[in-house]
Image (cartoon, rainbow, N blue to C red; front, side, top):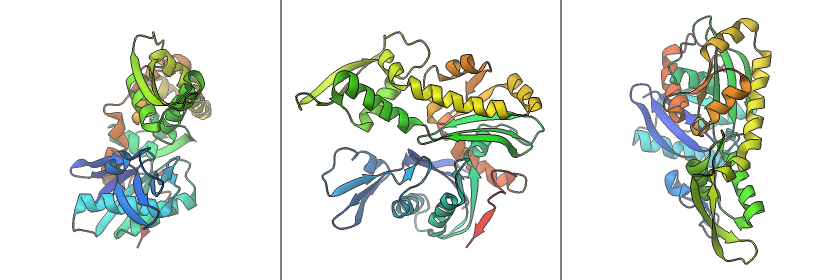
Length: 335
């Protein structure tokens, strides 16, 4: 069974070339420091964030889209694939996504983690390539197409033509950074300390970056920094705008860098077709409209943007001999 893996900072998705996305859970591992045993992986571990005693560590083994804790990432990948394949441990081929500007060392760490579970061949594909394939874009034409993939740890931006990346940029800014912005905003303005899960829920409920009106409200609960007692505060979409807008504008600046470096003929194609948004960040209300206003180019979100990259890894098997930069660049690592 050939499979593709979108090994993201926030979530891990596994796709089959024939069946689409077959596994989707948070990239989290719960670890017992005393016994050195793995307690939970995926959603079960995610539910433990902020609620464990000192001897249990809840770890995100990926940071900014690349492996930061090799042992935990190895465990995460093995357990997720075991759930998908059952007793079948040997995998003929695996395709794994990496950020556009991942170093050779970071790529090698991803490959080694995949090879440890028995893969015969491991391919790496850059996230913008997979995102465009997953969105159904024909990247084989002599025609420019641009994608902005906003993940949990990084935002990958690329312009492609004829199966290759022409210009690219990777900004270490994504959904997790916005969660931290919300935590910091609530702490500074309301003297309330909240956890990352609460911040994420508030972002999903309220985040709007084009002309919020203060009509949407959401109550967050945490610890009052003055009294030390449990407390809550009601946030509005205006609060959420003020919390995240600075980093949203930095993200847009990263997109401008790619547009400025793009060859003029491809710029004309992008002006005609627009810019595709993928990843979880594409779901932020008003983001496409704000980017359209700032860039002067139509920006639109893909259908089901969260799973675009994962779907693209499965589709990539059909294009192994055609894809160039972003796929053949790293080639195949054989066991």
